Amino acid sequence: MPPISALSDFLSQAIEFLSKGIETKDTNDLVYPRERTLGTITLVIGVLVWLGLVFGAFGGALLVLAAGFVLVLVARSALSAHVKRNGTELSQAQFPDLHAQFMACCERLQVKAPPKAYILSGNRGLDAFATSFAGARLVVLKSGVVAAMDKQVDGVRFYIGHELGRLRGQHPGAALLRWPAMWLPLLGAAYSRARETTCDRHGLACSGSPKGAARALAALSAGSSRSKNPGQSSGLWMSFRELIAGSSRLSRRVARMMNTEASMPGRNRPAYPLAMFVPYTGRLGAGFSVLVVVYIVGVLAAAAIPTYLDAAVKAKVSAAVVDSQPVRNALARHYQATEWAPKSLAEAGIPSHLTDGTPLSLDPKAMVLTVGLEEGEVVFTPGVDAAGRITWECKNGKGLKPTQLPSNCSEMTIGSN
Image (cartoon, rainbow, N blue to C red; front, side):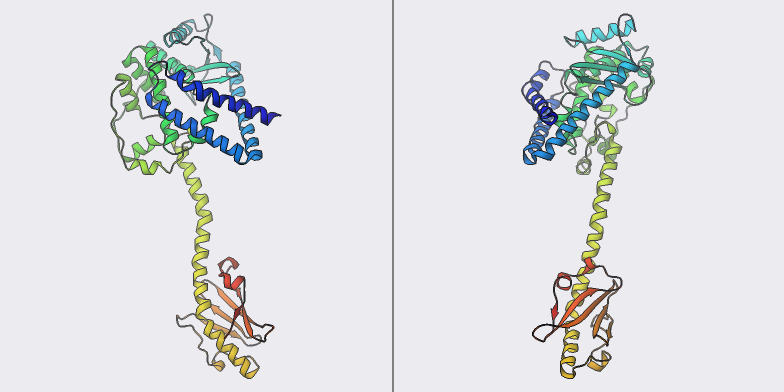
């Protein structure tokens, strides 16, 4: 059965990454230390969430898990097919100089089985990416970025090494396992930034020149061969944007290129509580994260505001029910004494307003009392129970919704003394 097969593959990946994934990363010092810590945390949280869903609600969660697994496979298959169909594979016959640099980077980073590398036309979207599917690993470089760094050999090597670092760190492989944890505010973005730092370290090792790596990093961030000035701002909104983004700001990344052991300046502390409410949305960007929060807040507000308004009106109606009790008692006594309904409130000796100024009106035909609140009308209709006592049924009138009535109106009748 496909769901069982998907679950089996999923658990196999979990066991593999828990037992081997972190150890593989520890074989050299190119992995940023925080990635090991955050990677373990996100992996454990992700696996626990998945297992909790599977065993807590087996049927539905298993189908969702299987569907997610299949979607990931389909997406990777489509991406792989697109690259192979539209890209040009690096080889000794095609782009021999670039192929030589790629193989040199693989050797320098001790990649025993070099992945296939492709040049993809265009410079829009992602500058480069690495992926794996059915045991095949791909590194895809964009022609526009390669052309922009044509005169920067160290820059091209940094560009290649950065993506090789993504494969060496097994970043694509555990994406589905970590997916539930990656949406968590602060944690998901922090782990993503740590992974990017690991990739930067691989790029630096492949480049061999801190200055060349820094220039390449600036060029990649600028989107052209002209690097932008990496600002040093650490204000509130700069820190907030960085905390919800998947990569550190350019100034930090360049500083680490120049000195991998350099201590980074702290971020603005008030930015942390703000970032705690923004989920991480991956490469969709920090702006999309804010849009997600705005959407969630909007949905919650759409549900909460009407509920709050109904509760406020209900409180006023409840007060009116209590305040009008003496009026209903007086009407009941008049009817029991005379055996007919009064033609007006004045005939029964009842004022036309409650003590707070709320107007009252009486329909003498059925002795129906109406309390005219600003929010709407509350209508009391009399009746007689089995013991001959007068009771009052409370209903909403003009301008008032049934949800704004208190329980003693909508669920029971109110007796008179």
